[in-house]
Every structure is written in C-alpha cells, then in structure tokens.
Length: 117
Image (cartoon, rainbow, N blue to C red; front, side, top):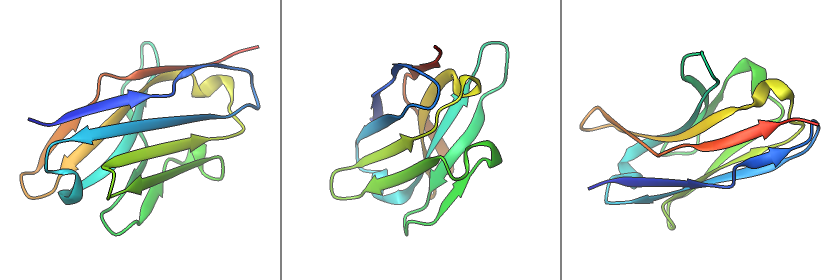
C-alpha cells in the first residue's frame, strides 16, 4: 500500500517562506513522477509543480521563480520550497505520486497553507 504524508504547512505573512515535505512509503516512489497540487476553497485542484525521475521540473506560471520542487530518491521524499508567498497562494496543498507503469495516481491527505497578514 502506498502512503503519502505531507508536513510543513501553516500560517505565514505575505513575502514569507514555507517548506512542504512529503514522505512516501511503498515501493513506487522510484517509479513515479512526484508533484504538488493545491486547491483553494471553491476552486479545482491545480498542479503547482512536478518532478520526474531524472529531476526535470515543471511549474505553474503563477509560481515560477518563487517555488522550487526537489526529490530525494534515497529517502523517498519530495519537497516544495515556497518563497515570496502571496495571499493567492493560500490553499490546501496535496502531494501526488503518478506511478508511471500502472498509470495511477496516489494522493496525500493535504496540508493547509495560509498566507495572510
């Protein structure tokens, strides 16, 4: 069974930083594209950033230059460093593992990020 556990959310002032982490259990991490998605109240869940097995990254336009995704294949973890946070970054952030061979997605439980003064 695959489990994704996020941590690192919280309340931060505009312009501040947060680092989200996701720990993956199970054997698929090394066979998965890992990503972070977010969902604000009343809106759909959107991709924030993703990273391939080889380390190639892809970002939503709204976070380019502010957020950085990284993965540690030895520790089965993926992180999202968020800098220069804005109120519009407020959302529940979800860790995602897209298992390439099985073409299947796994999700964490989500962690709340609130950017407010």
